[in-house]
Length: 134
Image 1 (spheres, rainbow, N blue to C red):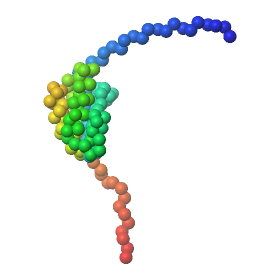
Image 2: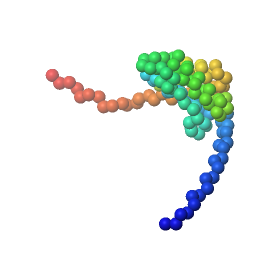
Image 3: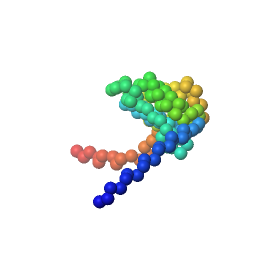
């Protein structure tokens, strides 16, 4: 085994700052938590936050205030890192954080172009129980 010198380490290039002025905001509002995700127009995640990741625990995670804090936290990250200013909002779920998250986005100067409700609606469902015979 010959002693071969290790290849010289190439200097890392600084990553170019990506600018995403418009995109999508997905709000998943369940009874137990609210998750807010900022994505580019193709759906690639830029920033996200949830009520649980902002320090709310237990039943407080499902409140409207917790959803507002989560939306503000994710919105600040998206605005600072990517220059996010315009959004299409997709709301899913039936929790208390639905309107609070959208209202907090409008309050932080993110222009809401449209709001879509993409909550899943069951059609058909599972097979019912067999009839009771006495």
